[in-house]
Image 1: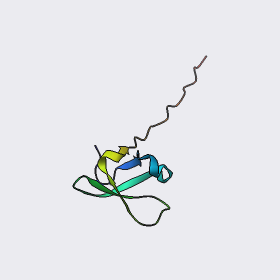
Image 2: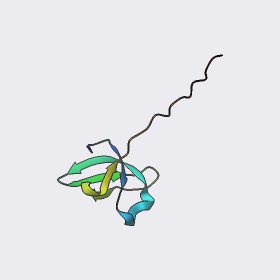
Image 3: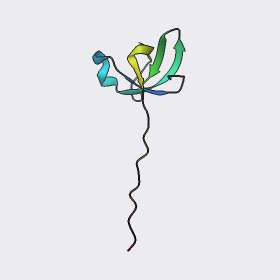
Image 4: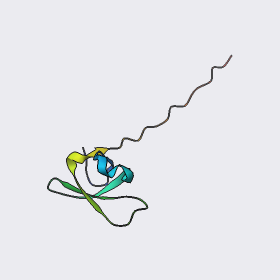
Length: 65
């Protein structure tokens, strides 16, 4: 579920260069997104956004002999 503060990526092929941003505000079915390193705010439909899930890397455990 996309809410304010969620890290998202754009699924619209025309804006693939923006990569990942953070939702700043949601109005109706539109989200206002800010992208690190890019000036200004961008507005996208919620259908064109996908939540970015941070994955924690698994540590490899060594077997003790």
